[in-house]
Length: 464
Image (cartoon, rainbow, N blue to C red; front, side, top):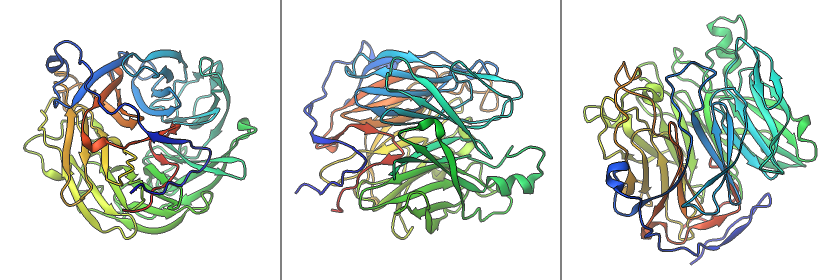
């Protein structure tokens, strides 16, 4: 039986994807290039060679992704790239912008692109043809009406900058965006630790008028619950949003995931919190990092970042908690199960379960696609959250020794991998955009979308 679909904010949902058999020829020697299961096929790429082993200001690292129509927007430490994905086996660069503010998380909505400027700089930097003054941190708003010629419209300065940004729908003509700072470290100017924590213990709510995006402004700040451990820095890393009949947000914050009712996206109301022993507290080596909902809004998928993404984690000797996705009841916070990475990584491979999304399946089954740094791209069926099963993976060989991971590794691999309209799109830190096909019955009946900001689910499906 097909599930009911709530359509909001102009999202167009089409029928079943026409391509049901993705047994497309892999490139020569795929085992040598990217070891993978037989049902995962390397298809195309749009290269952007990069490395962390250069000074700040010179990095062109690929970061997060968003999609609209047949275009992928790829965040970059030096701006963002616009890529034609109408032929997934042969993606083509359309445009590349400059906006040298580190990380560059992005949101796209019709003619608007929002990009996070992560960190204050001690000198002026460039964003498009505009000079960004030293000390600025916040978001920039772009016009992408002509994808080949993005135009900077304006900026919103925020108290603690913007590490990530999440769309929360349109209310009374305003696109609502949630911005998060990851950690209170460095918040403000001249503040002591207590002052930084107080300033960083919020999620910023931004309003961007669709008819006048240049007049975007900070609408309000929503205080976070937690952290429970007073030794831990405050601040939320990333927020997941589901609209439709669910209207919830989950913010991966320090040692405490915040779950909100966003029936009015401008005024999130805290419902409950989630804590997991050994994650995000002062005894651990990381913080909650990401969250996602199943499309019926019944389950939260949560991941954290031991080692901060720059350590050799996921080794055979590491505890399971360091290489795990967690599943929680989205109505109560009760733990439902967890999935542990099956391929052990080396001390020379940075690895966490980093950025992911849930595939919109008409069956109501649960399938998550995840990018995990040098552990690569994985697809996991968690229809039964207590007994998740790996469906397929592409796990690259180590990049070899380097200055990170205590002098043992280079930082690389999949920053993000997301399912979009029949394919898995991987934003590889040092490589660029890579596209994979997945030939498996677990992905049958996936819904085709007009747009995907992976942290935002613009509609909901009825529960099974």
